Image (cartoon, rainbow, N blue to C red; front, side, top):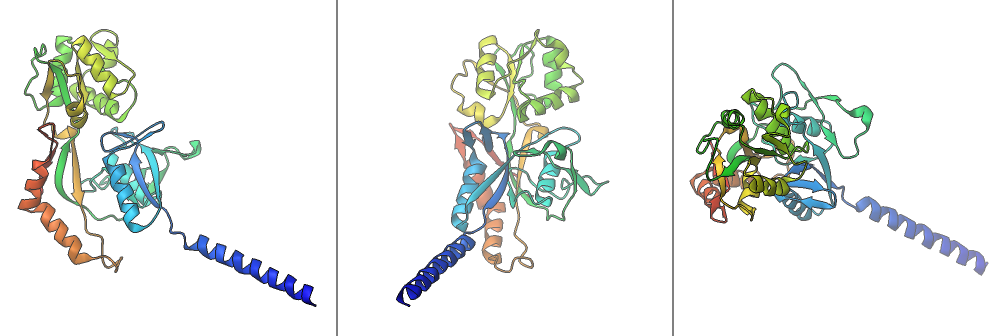
Length: 318
């Protein structure tokens, strides 16, 4: 009888332990999934074992404060005429692939194509071949309020400026002058986001740069740092993001020759979570932050941030 009782007690203990384990497993908070572009430094990047960026750091802090593990869904923006990044962002969110997405302002004018309610999901880590090019119905997302922009790209070149593009703001026009002068231009040539942006600019300039590959147009097939080193070494112009250029050490006599074109800007926005759908949202505190960041003091603070003495962000709250 005693042995029977001991067996029952052992069974009950095992069952209780199992139930406690199941409860503990169930109590684990769901991961906070954020979609980040794999080649958008300094905001986000995933180059083999090297992963990080400003947005990645913000995502880690958000997950930490929410007490949830972070899961990053890396994706590759097509960044071409048929796949505008903000439409891709909308598609990723609408398809439920992530809870949050960083790096793209969902403005009222850019939430999607006016003539369609569908968008293509960009290629993402773990995507099956059969899913490529898949269209999804875009969700109804609230537009954000713009409050600052970061210079997405600049064209750098030697101080002598052989193509005479210094001070220009029209990036395609500047590239056309570089092509006409047949002055060297160093391209990443690696199918990265920066390279894709560059190809769009050549197309807007009416120049078939690929046809001149190996002569004045030189593709490095490398990352941004290596391409800038090559450009400086051969006295060639190059397209790069502003933050990378400011932190680049081997500038020589090179400087920013072309900047300010709106096609190179990266707009940021701020949005208040809808309290009707999420009652726990601290609406008043959220609105206070929005009022501050879009107000005079917040805008002045954004403009005052500098790296190596140079302004990185430009306040433009409307």
